[in-house]
Image 1: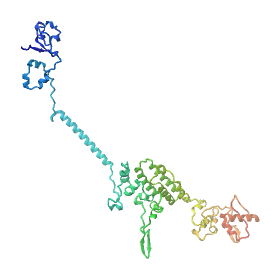
Image 2: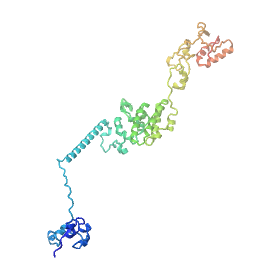
Image 3: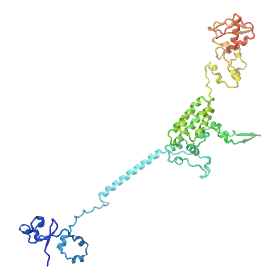
Image 4: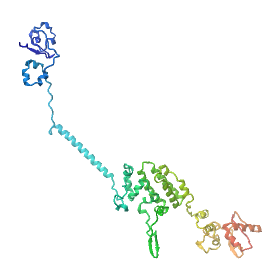
Amino acid sequence: MAAAACKTCVKCLQSFPLDHFLGRRNRACRNCASCRGVPPASLTTPFSPLPSSLPLPAPTLSLAEPGTLASAPITTTTAAASAPSPPPPLPSPVFLTEDSLAFRGLQQQLDNQASALSDIATSLQRLLASSRIPEPWLPQPVAGTLTSATLPAANTAGSALGAPLPGESDVDRIFSWLLQEVVQQVIDDVLPPQDLGRLRNPDSLPVDDEHEHAILVNGVLIKSVPSAASTSSTRHFTKLIPDVHCFAEAWTVYTCIRACATNDPNLGAGLGAFLLHVIQTDRTHTWPSVASYVLATCCRRFGHASAALWAQQDQAAWNQHLSTAFRPPPKSSTPGSAIRHADTQLSGPPSKRQKGLEVCFRYNGGGCPEGDACWRRHECSGCAGRHSVKDCPRLLSGVSRQNPVGLSGYSVTIKLCDSYCLSIGLDELRRSAAIKLRNDSRWHSLYMLSQGSADLWGHSVQG
């Protein structure tokens, strides 16, 4: 029995007999009667749509062999009606070629970026080359001829401090005369205090006398090696640093290297405060005593002192080396200054210092035979001027040189004073005048001249 012809509804996609697609006046419709709302009683063939739950055979047909499709009991119309509609066609792919505009634009952008990166790299190289100064040649120590196994470690901040610090390379360029070993000792804070002079420029160091440690024996010059004790003493320190200016030079180099090699930002200020303290101390004390104080302080502080400790004064070292070593005051050209500062300016045995405080009576009496070799002061006993008492310009005009006071054959002119005059007429006044002349150093020469005279006619003493 042949199967009845069927048609698929375009709306519900169900297959129905052909009479389900007849409309008014028996015109063919595309929608089934169920979709158009036509009652099934008017249909010649009962309305029996296919169950929608049945699986469609489209996947099976697409996977079956051609022979299987030919033997299937389903008709061509039913298979075509049950097959799903093909998907819409995809847009055709666009392929990039060397001649396409998109490829050319992309290639041009890449070329522009590569050119910009090349310009940036060139500019950076120029900046680095302009900021980099060629390092000067460093003098090699005497031990440079030894093998590399015996040489000390290289002077790099990385080996001692980890990462290089800012300004470390500047130290090597500025202080080019420093040996590699000395710089490493300062960085490690193990430099001996007596070797501070090695931080100075060798052009300013004193030249060693080759015959300093030599002994002449029977016409043969024998050189002796100085002991280690003398090398590390204060004498060795003052030989390399003879004054405070040389110490400031060496200490400035030491401060720069230590400030670059430490993580303490205040260490440079502390070392600078110690330098100012040494300069101020040198104004009032002699340099050998100041050098001993500096050497003692550095021996106590090198290797562990902080910035706060360097800014403080070492009272123990001060009391040991500077408590009595004061610098004498400078000499003054004022006429009367020799009397006021005679006790601090004179030197020598106590007997000579005592003579230096006295006025030479022979100089005021007519002339000292010793001249400049005399230890007593050659000055006027009345006004402390650079002349004898006979030539003193302060003599009053009322005293006549033609009527001098006679002292047993001696002719002496006496200076009078308006504020204090003595007219010797009585024995008591004679004795008081003699005592005054004997005790006053300015009139000592007059007293000595009057010892040979028993008859004193008149006297006048300045008070």
